[in-house]
Length: 205
Image (cartoon, rainbow, N blue to C red; front, side):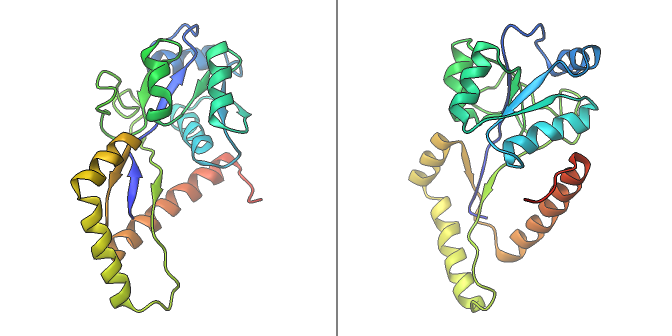
């Protein structure tokens, strides 16, 4: 793995009468089928982040598919949709201006950009964690010494001060894991999403 994002933010329309995850879940259960959420695409990371919320909270919210993050945020602001899970960099200016409300973050630790916003895990959804990630893959026949050489260079690069600064701006965390470490992570991640998509009833397309 080269990098992972530092997490997404569960944001809602500020006119929704809730200010916490606990209140949001209670509202969803009191008003079954009323809440909806935006996601730019079917089966992508932001869709899965919302469905993981549904599974762990044991609620049903309706998926509204968009062609991109920008139109989804526009409709969130206007109240056409209720919830969204964008990345922090995209949503931060709108959160700070009060046009949308952040109620939780998807990472296992609070984000430095939003220190007062709790994680979903500490908000009652135990075990909730959601990250996107980026990695380098090689053909299976690539000699291990070449893979090791490139991995070493990547690990060095992600620890460079300027790279760290730029990653911070993009909401990324450099990882630079070794092949065997990434293989373990990849297997666990794949198993996690297989279970989640099975519960969702997602059919490969």
